[in-house]
Image (tube, rainbow, N blue to C red):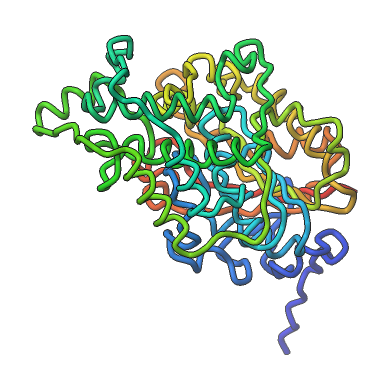
Length: 431
């Protein structure tokens, strides 16, 4: 008689996982350095939603390195409740804070790059289209007195004289009302904190967000000659390509394009709840935020996989900043030691501002890096787990989101051998 094959006892994850059990079955968990599972095995996951899922406002601007709204929705819906405060300290284009507001939570977004800050604020402040248009139309723009001679030649590559003149006048007034710019804050020396508080400031930020989103691209209301909408292209390449393909710089009525875009973005309404946006550093959150937040959902930079400042150099110009100065304030480094230190400082702050018993979900990706003639894969999640433990977090689970690079939301221009290979969502808990 054959003996029945005995099963090895599995580790009991019920106490280890707690509320994570509602999205993953213990039988789908494997053990490496930390318990891990595939996003394929999660319950009712974001993977079931189409790529363009979500509120139209999420499409205010395309930005490389962004995660899909459905992913933010998944973790906010499962790990917070109505009225909770949700923080993204690397808010990018404001996906997580805005989705939190849509779900009747209060979304907070912090980012050190000006274009990300403007986009986040433009989304989370509940500015109705009608009141935004009323504000915009109340501004008197004297285009005839505009001088474009001092504009850098790299900028002129993208715009017709007529369109550029309008951009200059409109951006000057909006920046004045928002009180944003290098003359208003000591950005070069790292004093980067800014927040739009008044209704006028928030209206100005809303329109700056709209203007940032249509500054370049190939849609009917894009202001530049046809080019990428996700990142600011290199001027010399763009100039050469436009000449070879006979691309023309369109003459646009900039205000009409802005209003048309706003109407489209608000076609599905706006949230009942307003959020908050801050220009600031993830490593230097306000002292008053001690144990303030119920949930953190964020995606910090992955070493040098994304060059955020250069990718948005034209948008930074629009907002009155030099991308080279912006880059100095970001966590863009090829040094493992510097990156680890920056992640520790961010995670220490995240631990400080998170309430006890609450969670942080940190999305990072494996990065391909050259070492001599060889390519090595850096598992960025290893940095996060190591530094999170030092900062006081418990690491409960790692979710492997193995979408092929050519199918990814944030890397449609990469081949299978370039850049990001896999996302890993590190699930942290503060005891």
